[in-house]
Image 1 (tube, rainbow, N blue to C red):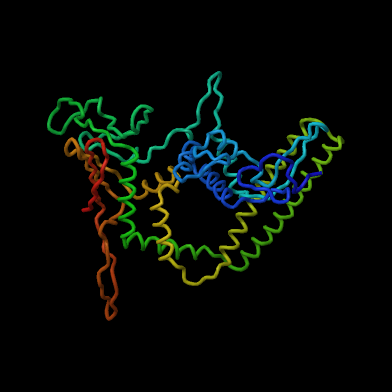
Image 2 (image 1 turned 180 degrees about the vertical axis):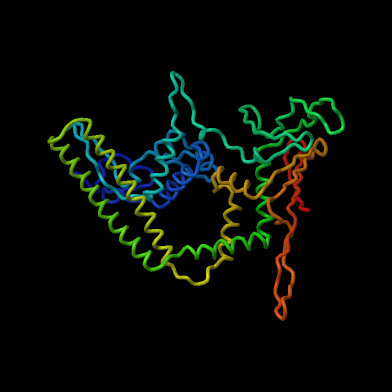
Amino acid sequence: RVQSGGWLGGPPPYGYLLEDGKLVPNPEEAKWVKVIFEQYADGSSVDDIRNYLLSKGVITRRGNPVWSHGSINALLRNTHYDGYYTYTDKKAAKTLRVTCERLLEPSLIKAVKSAISSRQYKSSGTKRIKGSTDKHIYLLNELLVCGACGGGYGGSRRSTQNDYYSCLSKTAKYKTSKTDKYVNCPVRRNLAIEETDETVWNAVVEVLSKSHLFKEEIKNQTLGAKSLHRSTKDIAGDQKKLARLEKDIAKVRDSIVNLNAEKLIGNVEGSDLVKVIEKLEAHRLSLEAESEELTNSIKLKTQDRAWVDWVGEFGRRIDKLRDRGSIPVQEQKEFLSGIVKNITVTQIDTQTTSLEIALQYPYVGDGYSKSKKGKKSGYKLIDGSPELKVEVFSKRGAYKKKMRTQ
């Protein structure tokens, strides 16, 4: 039989503590377990997660402020957070499946399992090829353009010096508009990655926080979501589907329990049984994830259709954007790609570089003006400028920033 409740010795897994010999959630640690799983599912690498935990001052169970890659990898594969773990009784040579309180939603666990599978090294003959998801993500790689030669900028990481962006045409040759001769790109100054990313991100978020056009877009998106609500008949259909799912989940759980019991008492043996149980566990997780998604959908459809606090939603989005460290790098990159067309890099002098940010929409300095239709008066949204200029300069090795918009 599957055991339940009691802990069989040793320190509890990260995210749990012991009460009366049983595993119960540790609220503070459980919070970070969820953060780790969410960031990994969103595309962050183990190294990104490790750096994020360090920046937030999250210490390991042993009091170490720096998490090891192995600890994070082991945590991502821990079945406790899915509500069970296995224990091998060496004397009886039996493996027990023990249930415990689940910390994470099935959909999140499933997403992490899929991400782990997709990032694993793939075999190619005798070589090992690293998956593309393990490559470092440079926030501004596809956006930075050299103002001198028109070439793109690329990121570079070195163990012996600061990480930087540099013009990829530095060593190549190009033709100017005034001569048919090929000349070298004159730009020699690099841009520090961390400071440049921060400067661009903060400048864009600051513009959006003041933009009436962006606020209007959030309003339309938020209110438009209400149109997704379906009729009572559709909700009833979803509820019937959910009931069927719950029955299927119960049947699969019973099958897992019975097969484990048969294995324990020796009625059934062989590796095939282990594979069957593993497949049933995967099917259970898939059904539970579907059940979770359907439950959330029903909840959304049955929400009160009162006026949506879209101003509050706007504020929450801006607050999230200001906390850049809580957003996975891939998500940051996708956000900027939707807001920014390109960023032209111009070296003004040996210490100063100008970043001219071309936005997709005229967010800079937009506003409202009074309008009149017949006897009625109202307000009309006026476009601003899509251009934003940021200047960065360094002095004696200290990287400093100055921003202005125009």
